[in-house]
Length: 194
Image 1 (cartoon, rainbow, N blue to C red):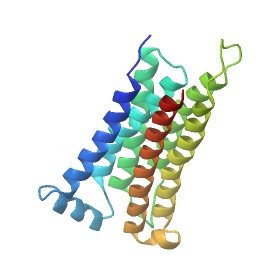
Image 2 (image 1 turned 180 degrees about the vertical axis):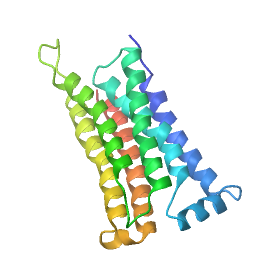
Image 3 (image 1 turned 135 degrees about the vertical axis):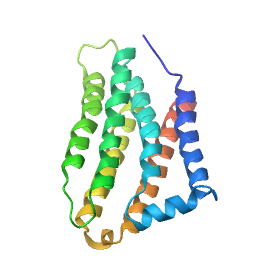
Image 4 (image 1 turned 30 degrees about the vertical axis):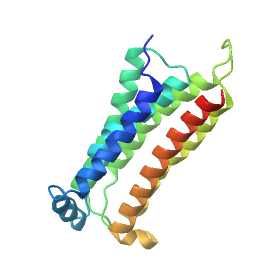
């Protein structure tokens, strides 16, 4: 049985995200960030998501009862692979002329942890049913994680305002900050009210 303390896990993904934003805004990295955006890429996003979203999915898995270190390591790894496929999509494809193969590989990888989470959350025969906040976390974060995929599709298909790469970038920033804040507040609210 393995357990990352939830508070430290929440701190970790928030700290990683904050550090990434600070580094991006710093004089050392801002020109690199700006140059990449002008080429319809943001490698910094994928580096940050590799760690932060993988920690988030491991925490959600633990909250649902997954405690085997091998399972949690595999969940971290397959989520990180999903992020790497997103990075490959940006590296090798251009919005407006996409080959979406990396996207579809990433989508396949990304659904696997959620299947494991649902199996644990909905398992019949458990000694006790998960508290309501667990279902709220699963539903809300599943929706947010999938909004990232929708944003990428819209960006690469150049639908409506997503014809401007920077619109999609702003959507990524909004989704990232909102998903992280939502998970943090749901975890802390559950701790405060139980």
